Image 1 (cartoon, rainbow, N blue to C red):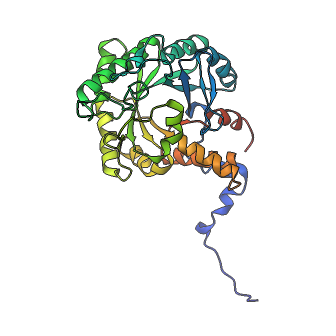
Image 2: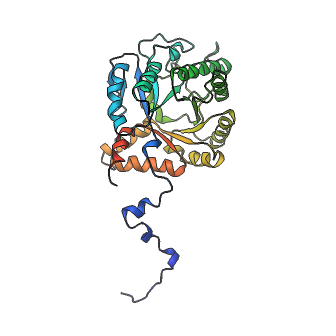
Image 3: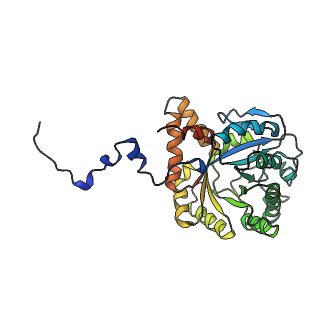
Length: 337
């Protein structure tokens, strides 16, 4: 065995800086907190519903009469914010998505219940028409079946205002119609909600293969065609940057990248090109299901991988994470790591 010695330069010693659990955590620029978590919740128009969603482990569709009992223990554990998705199963859908802003519909009723029962929880509403239209697309259609942007934007802005009037702290348009951020901001401002309701834009929303479980949960599969003509192509880095800049200029208060894990590069670029905006990302249903599937197969530990994926989002620049892991994180963040 050689007696040769090698003197490691002082600046090359890195491992001494993270040789304990604490010093490992100190390497992070941003740590996950409960404030950063927004929980997506599916509300249906069956008031007594509590329906398991097979492709989304641990998630259910909830009726309004079950919502308080479901949320109460989560709020005690530190739940800070939710985003509500309507799942109309009984309502009569039509070409313009009339049930979307029905005063007796699950979303508006859910907003009112949460505001009255859990005043410290921030309530956001997803704003889209796909769950409520008889054709399943996110806007209104021309006679030839293509999207008609101006009436689509006007209708989406109407729905957003209805949610704000019901008491939503935040509206989050996910439709990807051109011009809807400016229109919603204008509707909110002219109606007295400009400083009472936050506008979170699904700005860089990609036509991803990760949405399958959500579409089962929300019943929002299009009856024909697909959404690739208004959601971003997966390889569209430049288009995503343009969308982020456009929504920021139209008055969005928070910008979002969706999905999260396949688009961490876009998330990191959003932090650079829109540095003055809070930045959200959505760990969508397929991402969540993949982590669960890998853990079930013994590929990795569920908790470790949940943290690793979300901490990657924070490292890329996210300050708010929409994730179905929220109930788990409410417990995990209270445990020593």
